Image 1 (tube, rainbow, N blue to C red):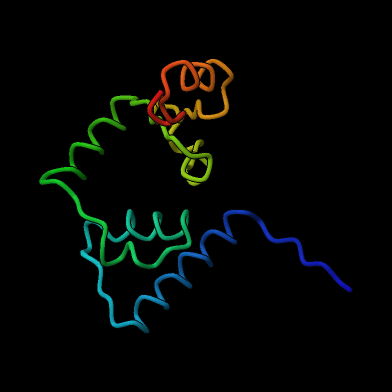
Image 2 (image 1 turned 90 degrees about the vertical axis):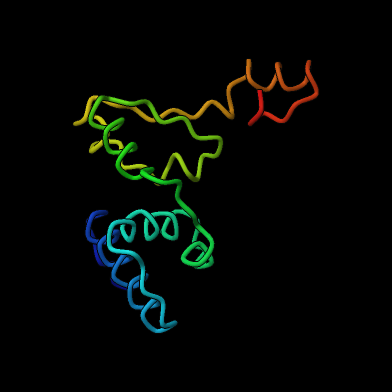
Length: 120
């Protein structure tokens, strides 16, 4: 068996192409200003239903871009969402991505208060 070494960015690029093809085959056209975001969500979750169900508040994309350019910190409550964030790009904007779901103090707070770890 022969293995092919493929760069992660090439894998991601091809994944996005496949997502675009799948959406086209389903007759789904994404709004141009939100297409990259929706494709990223689909890529992260492997759930094509987001193409139909993901909604955005008015000016959400513009406000998010402003926040990212200002060095925002993104906090996720799942490792999967955290993994889908391009950390290098975020760091270039002086931002960072955090996930505390596995931290012991978060688990302890959740136990003490009867919350989920996401709520804690």
